[in-house]
Image 1: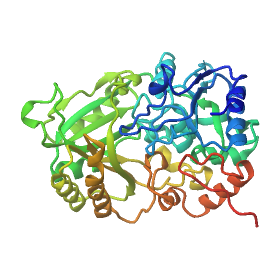
Image 2 (image 1 turned 180 degrees about the vertical axis):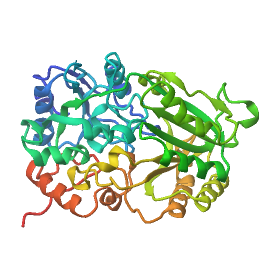
Image 3 (image 1 turned 90 degrees about the vertical axis):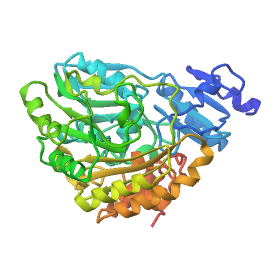
Length: 455
């Protein structure tokens, strides 16, 4: 960076980290493994003014700008070579109004941090399934988590937001103030500016019945599991990972490497209703491991290993059903892969998420029934090209009538896949709003929606 550029950072309140600084390598590390990008500078902003100044720096210099909340982007968009990383990690203020049932949260917070604080009041917002995810990214993309069937997506509880746009201006948006921008950021990702604060509606979740259950992965058990998940009370959300059993201490050795359903179940509410909801899953087959029990909602987020950086190639999609033929296809493809770890993750949707009108937000997949993520996890970066065709073929074999994609789970897959996340009129409206708030596409390091051409 030039001397002039460095002087432009003199008014930044937050930490400025440059190559050679002690924190540089840690600051440029994101969740995904195999990413070795070297930004010109990482700026851990402290407030909205810092955000505005960093945006101005990127605009004036033409340097690429990456925005990072938790660093979990499936395309590693939170870091960039020879550019600027705007890191929100130090913006973590959180104010919970238990009486009103609302929370004001800065977007550097993680899902686990927010969830633990809200649980102290017996309240919650549904984020994803990983505690270290930043609330900024997951909220902007939609947010599919353990409360999706009971309370909908994360964006369904978003009341208002503060966002700094490409011109450096701070906007407070809600249903009445700049409603188009508020619509766009509920599912449209980071295309429209840097969200610095969210206001959420909180829900009473004073205890859960939840945890991990491992079952044998036969075609009958897979189909029955999905059927039960679809028929379950909306308080119960599930994730079924069909995969080889990992060699964890609590998994009996005779099951290591054999295909199992590594399931996560969460019933929003403790007591007899929760026990009744999970009982049919226990009856599918004798569980190999059963850790489902009454507890607190934050327990769904186990401690994260900050040294875990998976090398993965993946594909996200939606399907309409899992019958015996689909279950057989899943097992056949998993058995055919040579990847050290491979998975088909099945999430039954519906419930509260599906009752929101499709046009109400930029998340266009309200009617999608089951989300599937196919992935191969590798040990070395050079192995990924070997397993990528298997993932692509696996997804093609599972494809049914739903051509959509969930933007938060997209990797670096090209423009057509971004269009799949925003089909039809959703794309057109987003592109028009993009033209209004970011006409030069300053915010392009994301699953990008270019500004529409002026008519």
